[in-house]
Length: 347
Image (tube, rainbow, N blue to C red; front, side, top):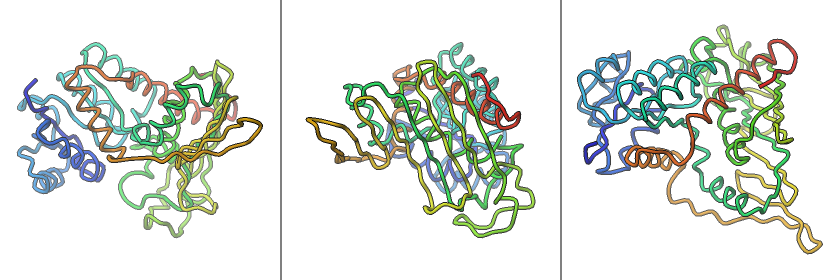
């Protein structure tokens, strides 16, 4: 590997321009973004011009053939995560793939298997796990402050947050709606704090009530006539260790707050809400609420990219992200499958 990690970007949309590229550039002389690839040539060239990137391609196969690249960010619609990621891994690149891992469990399993076979890092864009609040709570949990975590609630809720841009309302390209887009963030955060216990049984219910009609929203007008996803999903997951998790996620729901991203954990020694972090315990015959002071010098997105670069340079990741991505993808599939058949699904 060269002194600078040579980075390629696959997909020149908003997540690449607003998150991945700026945070790679914050890594200074540890990296060099050498190329951006997008099937839309104008988008690739515009992105390259904006950030001073030398090479552009409309085919990532051509990019891998022509350039020496160490790692890539996959910033495409969900449907293309699997082919882009596996092609990059086979080309000898480490990969930071945006969430969710893929469209199906089989794809996520295939991605993890290729990464293992090639000895490459495969991380996913679950940036909330890199937040200062989650890191602090993880330390409290490791010290036994919450004890046995047996019940969890996870919320990724928007009152009227249907994206009016991109392909977010296209099931064929995205695989689903709020569950697979924002719900996965809080699902990963919850599982990460729980230590990724083995799931057992899943029950899910999805609703399509508000997105299929014209309305107002915080993210502009959406194409309600071609709205093919759910706008609300409820689910419950039980685990083989006896714990349970309730996940609620929406793009549109008649609720008070504009947006709620929250994980609440209940253990036999204490509980916690994560965003913002608050810890609930009983001590000395007294119920107490603790609000830790959080020092956050870097954003969760910056830390995600920094740790990906660290892992690439070290040749190993601190957590088995590829395998955890498989768990996430299987749970998403199980929730949608349960909603489809109207019954529980074994994990």
